[in-house]
Image (cartoon, rainbow, N blue to C red):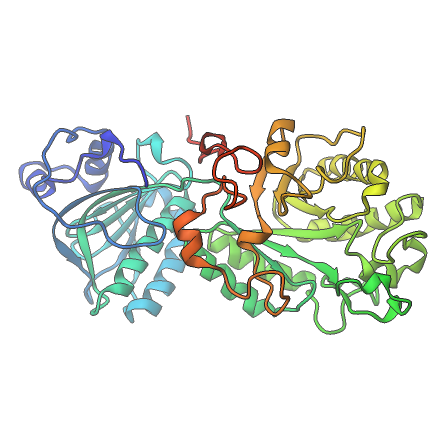
Length: 464
């Protein structure tokens, strides 16, 4: 259950404030956020609107805001440059939901029926992605960043979509902010190609629910393909297509630099980060078919030979070419399911690419493998672990060693249709009833072998 903040007892006599004062919407929001009305009893009971994720804090008034043909999207002139693109995205999405195409105007004096967007707020508690959402004769959305404003517009759209007339929002004040910084989804475009249009639609789908990280697994191969004598002809795919590596990109679908630019432009407008993953030194049949001399000499041909200096020369060239394609501050090097009997070389590989990519201004993420890959070689703890399997990377083990981890547990969160060993569809009822970011196993209810303490999960950091 979400906690209620004492300072949010604010919206109950909103109508009386408007009658007896001449405060602007900006002053009203700042006064409310500061808790000036915190002791006013609740007497006007609009229930909290149903949105996903649910609002952190809500105080209802009575009646509703009404969208009309005269309504506008009004942008605070002090923040036009920061909010112009967000306002345009809201304009387009509002038209799709309500069939009303509202003009975007710049004004400090919004009128009845307007949506007013501003970065003027003195409330530090909403953080960099939170927002204040005041609904009266107009809807005022205030935040510290354009991302916060964007999330406020998603709340408005979700509420309007549920209204039969697509024009009403219940009056009241919300103070909303995400509980967790990382809210992501990974798609395996390596084993199955998805068009750029599909990926753009997924960005918008994620943004609707205020998710912020879209992880693209850009290379992989059929399971066991590297164990076959016919490994050169088994299915494998690398999805980035550059003239620097002619013939490397998959024939059944790939992405150009222009494709990735277009996708990231959409993602930026929708407050989503595209996190690229180039998986090595395993799952690399696409690389070893392209460069057979780099294949392992004593294991599956989907493994790169970490004893061969040419492997590192090749991967350096791969990252040098494709890293500039992506805006994200963090990239994923994969690093999962390499043979445990070569753990020393594997761990050295991880450290090498942590240093290499940091020298280029990036931090890295990797699949959790360090519990199974036992070695005296210590891997740097400034790497984020996508903890996908409790045997390969025990969450408690990773936390005790000092790694930041993302819960990507395969048993609970993977969808691999028709595989037989993962879900065809997510068990959404189970997740709703039992899952939290610190839960890695439903059979470990708090005995500390895999599941973490709730207090170990880092909430959203707040400014100041």
